[in-house]
Length: 258
Image (cartoon, rainbow, N blue to C red; front, side, top):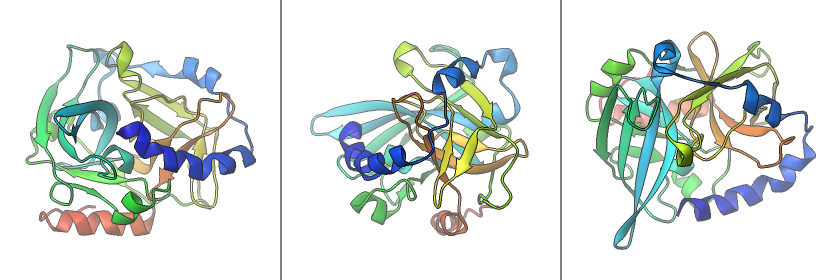
């Protein structure tokens, strides 16, 4: 199950997280974020999709929610722990563009999934999960969802020596209280030797949310959140190595990633 799958990953960084400068006030960012209503649903916000994920668990399906983003008309990027078959395989994902309430959305598609067929995660992540490798992709059967999104992010390696002035995060947290798209922007972020840290407020469902710039550059994936209000949350930064791996997966489907 998803919670079990995250236990080892959380343990790996628990000591690490407390050793970093704790300069994030997530209670402040919780009130800073903006809920997206239908009139505001345009541009980059349409490139962010909601995932309703089902895993095969013996005779029943475990359901949980997450976020992903377009990086190609037929490719979505998300957190690896949303897709990994470390415990139980993902068998189906319902993908929704433009979800602004439980009953209001633009387009929805069910995709039956199989690891290394149309969903991909590093095998090393499955065996030894780390935040640095916490990414995966979904190959869509067609571009029908993309036609409603109208665009995709450019997968862009994060350059610590040239950080953007501001970062954005948009996603679908807290599905328990209803499906809602939230967006936020911040200048309170920093780079550790291998991870992004920021003050974005996130909860369950935020996993896989794109971390992006105002120039359409997707530079990270939200992969880890902490309940402590002053501990900065974690994003897995895009690297050249990651981009090369994603291109390799996509070439198997005749897809070229920019």
